Image 1 (tube, helix red, strand yellow):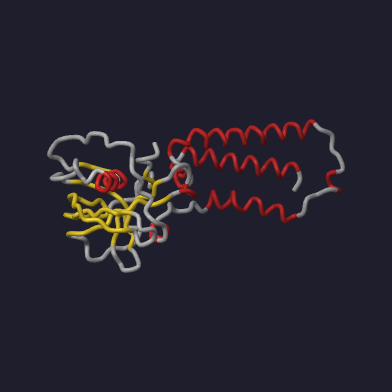
Image 2 (cartoon, rainbow, N blue to C red):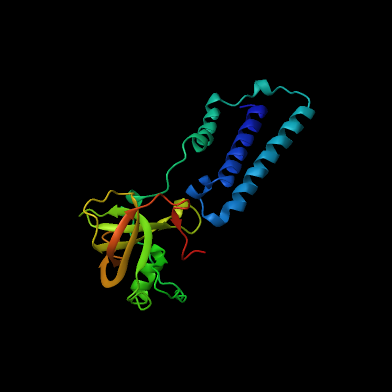
Length: 236
């Protein structure tokens, strides 16, 4: 791979990062707060490519043709092309079913809004309050929670969001077990908005014995995948 090809690869990778950072594509890989770093990395790579090309044009030609890299080095372009052409889906039910719940005790529980309207909570927020605060602020409240469906080996349904600290590589699930008026047929990876109420019933994750609270389902309706499929409730 000669200098011109290296420059083209740098430029292509930088342009790909800028594209990911200016759309929601970057959310498939890293948490929302890292967007500026993705854009910065793309800009630096493009600037490096331009500087390399400028330097190469000002430098007299040498005997590079006697020291060419093997053609197999062009395989380095495949990951870049894959990033452009095939955006991977966010981690879903398969990862959740094979990974134990990552619910951890939060430092505290902020006061919840009052009123008669349904209270909208994140999966991790409900699970944390249900397990570590015994649902004190959740009792007698109508709740709305959104997540995707996963099933354990026995077919028991869970509502899940994958939480992450930095990037998709460290994503781990937080799960809520469903009881009550649960739809008779549930497909894994279907996103649902669940309306329901707190119940003190609990179970253990079959993967790691972690605590999982139940939610008493009143209604459930399919919803589109959110623009940010990951939950950063305890990592912001």
